[in-house]
Length: 328
Image 1: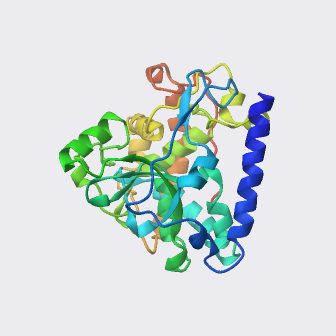
Image 2: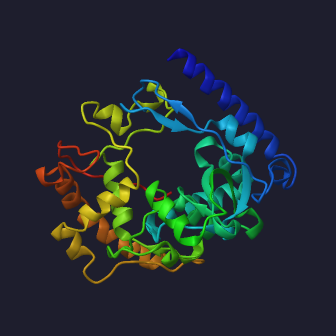
């Protein structure tokens, strides 16, 4: 345990040094890290099974920060191809405001360089880069009020399937749980029907509600590997140590489907509520949506703890109140 902690501390210090260098000089971070392209190499995974409050019971494969910096690249948000049809635009909007302030303060590069904000990519047919996580962060960067040249993310390549035919590619993506092929209304789609750009993602209010329920420990998601016991203090896995945390693929969408069955949630969204407009975001619509979801949150929390949800990953039977997170 102490060895892992020391190792992570060294990596963190290294990251801070890189971040400091990145913030000096205009576009310095772009000069140091190459742009994502045909020469970008696939990273290596290592098995992580340290028994901390973060890891859960099953060993997982991770990419170290050192490996990300060694083989990583930067990519324009406009060049990212989504692997899901929607995000919770309300949650993305809150992040977007924070990113706008980071950009105005000259601290955005340093913030994006942090380990947990690098985005994983798959190189698919035609050399296109498909985003397999951090769709909300990507949407937030896309909608932030910053110059277009700052709308970039650090990335690392987890698979190179660029030589596959289109159908074989999407079959493999599904097989490895790297895509969520459902629309906000629950309709199953093919990979070819996904939005072609981040700016074309739909809004799924239930995904925003699911994030609120998760943040209130209505269900328990495992902390990322590498989080020490001290850092994990106060998180849901630490507060509910007797509950089996979940690291299932697309966990928030799985629970969003459950929230959709709750009558109070259905009533709150009966007249719609999606706010899919982007660049700029429709803030008035998002404010109305936030008020509706806040009214539905207590019922969603109660339903998450009900026996009917027992089979869901991360199920927490201890009913308690939910909290609407602040939007900074």
